Image (cartoon, rainbow over all chains, first blue to last red; front, side, top):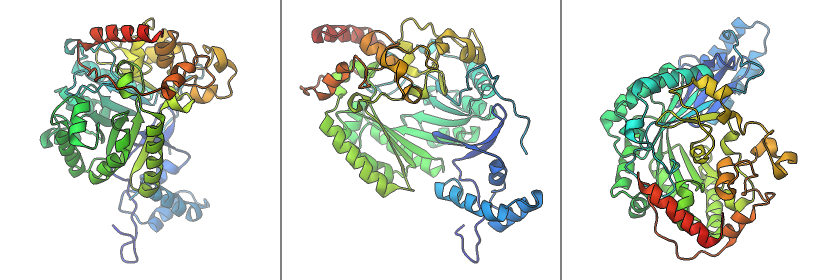
Length: 90
Length: 388
């Protein structure tokens, strides 16, 4: 969906990508053709919320509820935007 | 938020990320630079469906998260769908590495249903007749074109892989154009690595420095144009750059190869090392092979290094280059890769890189049984050149 006033962006993982937990290394991963990206800290949880149903403010709100006092409003939208620029979120 | 962290034991080597599964050495193509060994595994020696499923299960437990299902031509395995499903249930991301021959709508649908995630398609040239001549198969180009269309229609990510050499480096621009027209996400332009079949065919495949410089400039220009749309990857020609490649990200460091008969190797070319005694999944677990086998330990880390590598500040970056190339050119796999300008054997590649380009011999196409005669031809060529 094209982001805009009437159609806010609801991030979802690009079809080529697999988000998974790696129990051997104790981390979350984004796996894609020819590449594996290690998601540090809570990044995997943030990406996990990108299921195409939530808007960015929706994701921020949900995380703010889980982590009271964390600067999610200041960091999460920029993080999601950087993943979109990589082509990993659509 | 995460499950319990189960780290590798602090004493063991870091766990592998990737597995190259050579499901079969059978192939409808006969490319003269094939990365398969000269001694191709017979079909009767191949691992069974159940054995491959077990290898993938073990690989997942070991830490592998990515596999290239390759060959030969993996589509020649009638049980490929089951192998894909086994990888998927082990949590391993699958990429099919194919010539395109044998891919139809029904097969692709079955593979996708089994969990196939992406496809890498080989292309030999942008011009159909030249493609088919290099591949040694008439109609190969048309098969690739059809395969690309099917993969795009199925919505899977698609990459092109082009091995570059004297006969297609001047077509790099057209190859990139072809990739765009076929709607690919990624184009890997990989300069030929000269061991195995590539070494046998080196006189036919070795480009000139001028050709390489032109191609490199084209790639840089195209990369700027395609930024954000198509990922353009250039795999360096190590004979020409004076810099050894960080082969496989280090021996036994990142990935492993399982050959059709269950032999496990640190890289697909390592079968050429005569005294390696590579382990086999029929005899040992993958974990033992990775952590304890002498073959995987032999060139791991930096302790084994000789010559200029020992004190080199780059030794943790290029790992001494390629062991198979060191062996192929000097007869000693522990020597510094002759591709490195600091190697005492560097003249072996420099003389070739800067030498004249006489009329190239015809290709010695990769075929089962072609190897013994081919090895004989290689020995004769070496004695003519006064090499090792």
